[in-house]
Length: 386
Image (cartoon, rainbow, N blue to C red; front, side, top):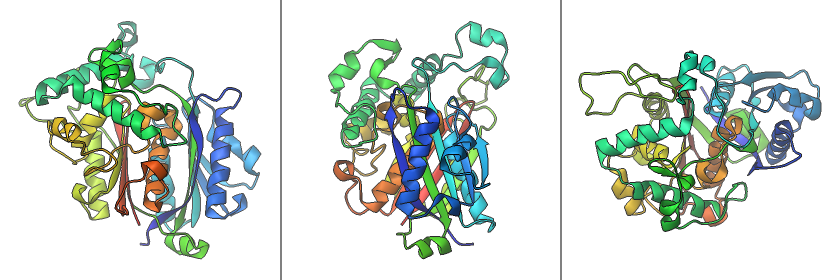
């Protein structure tokens, strides 16, 4: 079976864009990706599109062209974009298609996400007592993790400081001003231990990725950026996830629990035939600073508790052992749910092409990893190689 390649990428700037709809942003990204690949819309054989709050992606055919293309909408929490990409690569791997699209966009209102208990098979009282507010859940989760593995609030601050510093050189990022560690730590608390700079915000943006079979990619004359693995997994038993109504009692609670991210990551490395030590650059879900910390371990890059040393020694900086969230991640870009996971892959393609400018990872990176996580415990992972 031949590899699936990413032959075109496009992005609409993340943040707030008054007067521009989510679909507008998605169409903009698609047109960029088509131009990048050197193909026209009628050549696209299928599409998977993700959006949570900004309409159905398939409606963009009114703008792109009524070619009768197969276009399927995907809605899967924060992992929607990653799920769209997973579906697209499977369509090409099946041999049915040679050229297809994964696109995601969103346009969220200001404020916290407004998920409803019924959407997650939970009773109304769960929302009435405030547990649908994700800032509270994530704070409780990181407090537990910090206690178990010796992570300090300063380390959380270092994650945010790195994000805003990296975003200075990312034209598509929302917040592109550096913020000092002292300012991050002294900012008002939202949910202890998180200050306001340690959470991402719902946002707007659009991303499109054009995928092709290896044969088609060679015909197009594009440098081969191979999608060596794309996995998507749901949560295992006893995991502690967003909107979990309780924490299961287990016999030994001194060791990490299984998670969707651990399963998706292990499967991706198996499919790619490499290990964490072989990755040159990684984009990890960082809806809040602690998420990046926990996901470093869940994706196999370090042991639980080692993050304190990694951040203090700068190992996740752009010039470090494993650069993480080179464009500022969700903390600096915001999180338009339908587009966020695809933004990570977009950034990895930029890095593998050597087009990162001031945020470019040195040393001619050969492999890139992305990980997205969403409620109520779903995770998608991709591994790229050139």
